[in-house]
Length: 278
Image (cartoon, rainbow, N blue to C red; front, side, top):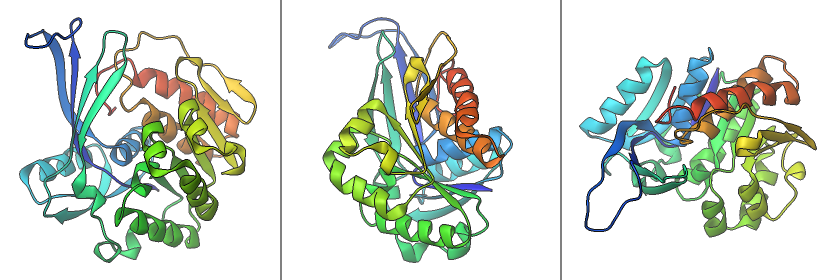
């Protein structure tokens, strides 16, 4: 079983047909579905045949209940705490060249407190995946550190995705580097921009450092694994698909390079469709 702790939100993905103009309208493709980095990782893991568990916090509202039911229908076991804040949502605006802009409302998950979760939720895992987003704000960050401690004592590996260059810049690269040193993850996933913001060699942060290179594939240690050439539609969730595929293969006994080979294939598939989920 693999698990993750963090956000489950509504994604509203908007791909305009051409450049948007102020005070004017434009035809667009719009998709509404589940999102959130932790939830996406679990959804892709389940689609790849893993037993997956998501620990999250959503609002005590109809949207939260629908999002939980949706991801459970995809085979993910959900341990959801219901909070007073509304369930989170993210608007994803896709530009003409595939660039993305995000606007988010995620206060509900950030309020997840250690006393609201049960230790058994983090036992029986082979791997616990932590989005760095979950380390950027309290009380969620303290809850995540406690979850990692419980999972590791029970024999689980830890993987951490650095999540966002802007988020690291705001939180502090040195502070996140210290977090990684304390958590001692088996695997760290980062884009080139995220690794640069960390301000410390990624190789010293985990046993297996993985740099996601987008259309160029991935780099594990000093070896590059090329990506398949595809027609990209939407990169939202592609990094989560990549991480899920890598972790699944690694747990099955693949070498880091073999796991990266599987991950770039799944990541390439993920960008060919709108939305963050399989």
